[in-house]
Amino acid sequence: MPLDPRLVEDIALRLRQAQRILVVSHIRPDGDAVGSVLGWSLSLRAAGKQVTSGLADGVPGSFRHVPGSDRVRRRPEGPFDLVCVVDCSDPLRVGEVYPGAAAPDINIDHHVTNLNYGRINLVVPQAVATAEILADLIQALDLPLTQDAASALLTGLLADTLGFRTSNMTPKALRLGADLMERGAHLPELYRQALHRHSFEALRYWGCGLGQLQRQGKVAWTCLTLEHRQAVGYPGRDDADLINMLSTVEDIDIVIMFVEQGSQRVKVSWRSQPGIDVSKIALAFGGGGHPAAAGAEISGGLAEVQQRVLAATFALDEQAHPARDGEDYISIPSGSEPDL
Ligand code: AMP
Ligand code: MN
Ligand code: MN
Image (cartoon, rainbow, N blue to C red; front, side):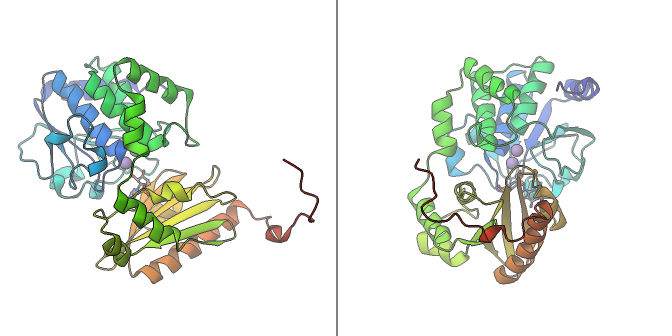
């Protein structure tokens, strides 16, 4: 679907009036946050604007190869003529990078839970990544799409689609991947860096989580505690992408990851099979996300948060499959399995 031409015109007008531009995204940035901030910043810079890129938590080690990441500031100094927030559904998730981000000039995002908090809101939930919206916008505004900007945007696209394989993938997104390759982005290398490379500590951290994997019916979950993090020396506050590994478990509707954050807070991530919308539960717990991938940061101890979240998730799964009674007890008589 093409971008709304009125919104494109509004953005064009605001950009014409601005010289000093700040581009920011969410805390604990993922590949789409990093790729979108950098791709948009690089394109605007190539168009002659003075652009500052900001991320409250800086660029994670796994994305330092993305062009422009060396110029990202955690606490940018203004003044700015225009502030643009990308890939962020809720202004509170911008963090301390820009305290005034509660009402930025432009909010560009693909989360279905976006709160439309900007003066201009370009929110396209059908887009598989914010990087996809930005690629469309750069083309609609006739801005330069350099090799570096294409590499950053392809990183965003790859990260949010787990390498073009999530259930929301579209032919349009796949074509965009090819277009970005034609602009010089190196798909195999960006793919490897974004999705197929983990630190030694991250894999040991996975071991802690995998060792505690549990399931009840079609819901599976595990947790990572502060003790785990310390034991293996994992430096981040995230799950080291373990949730993507968990979502490969067969015959499961929903997987959940609990990551203890200290000061009585727990980061929760949900991933679901098509047809089960976990963004609703995340929103109810003060978070947000997409139908098949959502998250929230919840106050409380690990055990208590687990209990509340599991109860709400079992209820959602039950709603999705009301007629599943007894299904777990159906078994194939031995000897009748087909020879595959
Ligand atoms: P995660 O589980 O952190 O990988 O996030 C999955 C999706 O949910 C991503 O699109 C995030 O941007 C979104 N998300 C995660 N945590 C939050 C939160 N606290 N508030 C709003 N959206 C979130
Ligand atoms: Mn993101
Ligand atoms: Mn995204």
